[in-house]
Length: 98
Image (cartoon, rainbow, N blue to C red; front, side, top):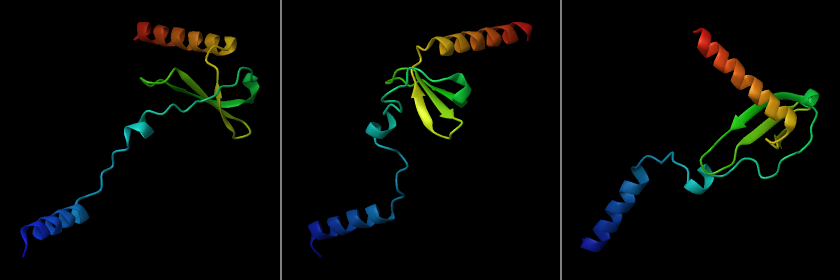
């Protein structure tokens, strides 16, 4: 058998039986979730808040609404800034009591 043909067959065999990689391309991993944000939304509409901070994206706030719609909220909204400040103060107080 020709050496080149044997090399190609061996390489194809290894590729067929090698376990598939679970890694995602960096372009998919590093994408920001929020491309646009909403500047005004009533707090009463929000069911759940999630905060995402990744190295290549700005601070992102994702809200799940009572209508089950998911939207990105501008993190500079005044009530959200107050909410975050209160949460930080609660965390500091709980650490001091422990």
